[in-house]
Length: 481
Ligand code: BGP
Image (cartoon, rainbow, N blue to C red; front, side, top):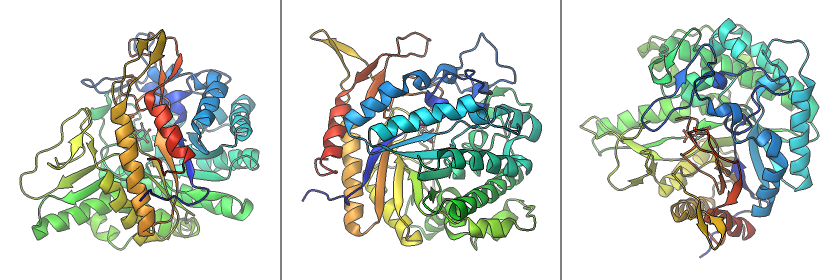
């Protein structure tokens, strides 16, 4: 039986400003955190530099030049059949240091052009307000989200873009993968607590106290922003965004079951419990105590969190792993995410491919929250090559088509299970710079971009085989997956 997705289901792709816009110092934009991260590679971690040195490669400075090619790219998305386009606004385009009284008009005008182009093609924008970056000046002054001052500055920025784009954007997400900020894994991007640090990003360390305090500030900021949206713009739909890394217990030893429960709470549930339910979960207190965390909670913070419950839940889903108390072999790759599951295959980067896990995750999330869900990132990074055949450039990426189809089928099963799933945006529908490794050769796109890690390339866009596969899926509303 073919899968049936609901009428009006959103199909599309997801991007982030810092990974693809380029034009990092154009039209008044201030440097963001990500401009201080060098490129990296499979073997070499990205580095953080206090000064931006011209002799090092900063791939995000040019990205894939969406800033100048947005019309061509959105036309390609429309040709594929997108009904939704997830993108982020670069905070430092709007407030170059985050602290100005007045916004930068040229930055605001750029997103007007992008939203107008989407509208022209009948594509609904889904806008992330903060995707792995903030004005770098806020890192220098406040050490990123460790500073409580960030709350007001973020609310000011959001109020500005809400008012400006209120007739063009309905769907908003506050923070990308907010939960990564609590773990060691991604705290540098999410919370940007890197003041004064220089060297390999993997060696920059923060304490649990700093991370959970920074997260608290983000929760309050998110709560205030959602409340503002609900009060002033009732047509807006506000969502959270979590990085869902599903874990299974390695064995049926009850100790493994408990360990997995703790892992799932820390990694996947802590943040969404706060943002969906509007309060800290009951297990938080013990967790804070055992990790030496003493949160400074100001008067009114918990009210802001309570008033800021999101309307829909969104997440990224790439992989699953296992956790256990016995010997568990760890996945290998340049970023590892837990134990090896012998039943699954991995990408070259060690990310274990698990479409059934997506169905399982969707059911678990929906059982817990009972609000509409969107998968706003899912995808497969691979080293694609453009080849010339019959005088035309082509990219054959069957592995990506297989990955896509299996995940679409898994979502169809979840819909059939009763999950209220309303959209799917593939990560990196056009090749862009990898967040984790800072390289171009980890490609996710249905559209190839001729840009390479050695700095060469024409930026030409080429349709991959997967472009046509996704087109078919979207055209048939998931039936031809
Ligand atoms: C998510 C991020 C994205 C994106 C994606 C793929 O965690 O939200 O920004 O980059 O992962 O990760 P990577 O680029 O490291 O392959």
